[in-house]
Image (cartoon, rainbow, N blue to C red; front, side, top):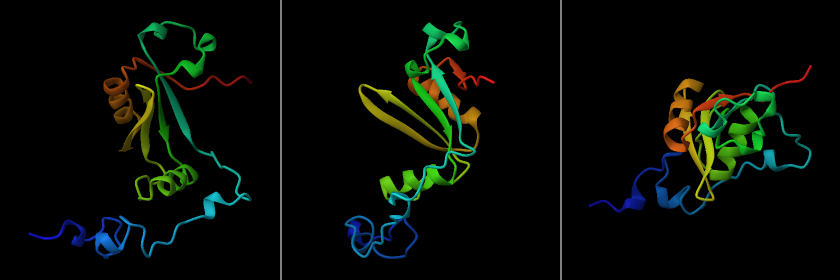
Length: 139
């Protein structure tokens, strides 16, 4: 039986897992997004807020968006790079949709959906959302 740490790492480097990402050996960390000169860029990010049945019929202008049970988000380059740096894996690409929400006091995520409809279906199952809204814009 093969040593589990001798299998190739899934990061694509071709190195064995024990020599690559698992223990952080020979890894170069992308710190470019952590520089203080970088200003967060949320251009092109789409966010839908999910609400449970209690807020199903409430006027969107009267809803407190802080009460959302989850968010369905389309990542841009900045969000994808930030998230990938935090978890140290290439999980998201720009344009991918993902779901995040709080469950039992912990943040839960579901990743890599092709469109918002797929992500919303998961949000309905996982967080019991019945309504999705984007934050109203006042002109």
